[in-house]
Amino acid sequence: MEQDILIVGVNHRTAPVGVRERLAFADQEVTAALQRLKARAPSIFEAAILSTCNRVEVVTTTGDPARAAAEVGEFLASDRKLEAASFNGSLYRMEGREAVRHLFRVGASLDSMVIGEPQILGQLKIAYSQATAAGSIGVVLHRAFHRAFSVAKRVREATLIGHGSVSVSSAAIALARQIFDRLDDKTVMLMGAGRMAELTARHLKALAIESLLITNRTFNRAVALARELGGTAVPFDSYRPYLKLADVVLGSLAGTNPVLGPEDLEPIMRERRYRPMFLIDLGVPRNFDERLNAMANVYLYDIDDLGAVVMKSHKEREREAEKAEQIVELELESFIRWLSGLELVPAIKDIRTSIERLREVELGRHRGWLETMEPGARERVELMTRALVNKILHRVLAELRRDNGAVDRAYATEVARRLLCGEGGPPDADDDDSDEEGT
Image (cartoon, rainbow, N blue to C red; front, side):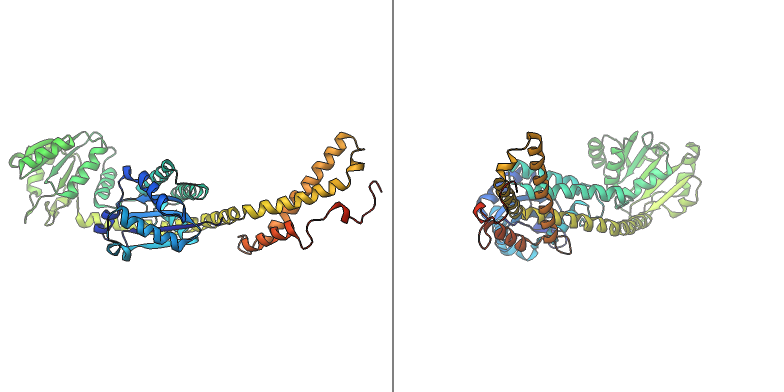
């Protein structure tokens, strides 16, 4: 039976987060949801659900895309207990070649909010595992998902799409790594508890920095965050003596004037014997006086500097994405050829059966003289005729292929019908007007 791949869903481009979160499935819900979908959608043969913060997509195979798309929409409304009108305008539908291309692009992180982010491939693998557990994956989606995994791997190996910093926090860490040979023996001071500074501190903590100091105008907040991150809280009115310990200082304090200037840092740098200090100013207005950049071994970056690093990385990833798109197209053509051949399996079997039947009829006509041959010779005749069948089948299939490498399914089915039924049916021994056996 012919199967088309169909994808119905929403993503960060078509639906706001308020819609996406209402359609989303928790990991523990997906397996049972797939079983409910299969039970209520008879036009769907295979199914998987990919649910992340940026997308909710139902990936299916079907012989009737229009009906299957309607059934998916009805399922989402019923299963998520929503009015269909609340999300129908955000739904997209892709089928056939377009759907396969989309699946490959999603796996390769070409359709992500941040091009090249690595998390989506893991999420796609989880979606495949959940569908396998639900028993809703068959031959087609098994092959499609595994090909998407290999496309993603090839893109990672052949391009630099995953390189560079794509967020302010990752840019700050990338710069810190350029300044210091290693970070596991460094001390970080977090000044303020702004979201971006906290995120950067979390990333640095994950890199196993030696220690983390946290100061904030509200000391209780510093204590709570220090407890959560495994750091040490420092009272704001006495943080300066601790600055001499800090190799990296993250500034995220609210205020109108800089809290740290050259006159504050010069004595501290002397105590540090001018070991390098990296200042990351995430405050707006700025926390650190821009004149600090002129001091020896002091490296100051503000939010605009980090933004420039991020933009540079985005542009580099966009250039690499063009190479990745070419890989996707090559793999897409390969998969479409495989899928086209899969759809022809019944017709190909019929053609092989027809040719094999003709072979057996011909051998039957000559059974008398074949039986006079030595067993080894008879076996060679058997092998020769089977090889001839394979060569004829290969020629027939080659003739059935279109210019683009796909197989004309309708024509192949007609060839199989004619070979099986013929206008006069397959030849019988009595119809043979060749010479008598042994002649």
